[in-house]
Length: 389
Image (cartoon, rainbow, N blue to C red; front, top):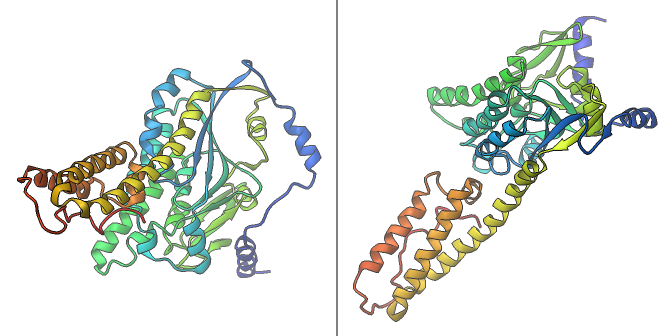
């Protein structure tokens, strides 16, 4: 059998749809993991850091940065990063083979946000041992996932690249501008992959659909290439990005092992006895997610109130409704400043200039003489440029 035939067979194997993987002898695996015991205060101290949801809203650099001094003070023996991110739009667009920048192009913050998260753990907390426990890593989270050298995946976990970053530059007509944008976005993958000592060609293929990806085994490791001339290929399309099942990631040396539970992860790191620490840190991170989402609902209600009430600021009711809307917009600005995720989801500009302009116009209206007017006398600014419907 010649090299080309081997390439085709392995390429087909690595391109199969993701399927649920199960161990051949689950009873033995369970008994093996039972060798790990959780205690109250003995053994290895383990801190759980959840990273679930979406990278620009649920997973934000400043949230982890606010807790890094607490983590340093706690000084656990091991930090376990639990990653569970499913990028539904990326899944759909990968399956369809196309994408629309207007729908998935709101990733202007990723080149700052993802490195900010990585900086907390891979730079500021680098003296503490860390592993990533992956339940799903789909889309723009994957470059961050691979910033950890040791990742473990559950049997049904997936590790996929992202088309969303490419959507930021793909439709730019000016070739020079498009090239600069592409370089800026793809550089992100190389920077994050560097923390995890990942091959640059692997990282670039995960964020750039124009890159090919093939590999050659060197002992138990794989050397990756941006061409199709190696021993096997994973991605032979210039329109898609690669994705790996847990089994594929393990066989190709991207993950350390396929595991069922936290106990499996610990045992593979020679930990037989452990206790969980920093529950308040874990809880605070989980609370952040529920808090920003609840504040999103409040912000949507405030925006709806403003749009409804601004036409009522007329006649004898003019001052009353102007004051009401001034307070409404100030409350909305306060929420967006405290929770940037709310601003992103509601599509307000980063500096909240639209809301600030609305507030200034309301204040100008309030300074005008309170004489009766005809028709709707409220501020007209604010309709249509922001606010999530």
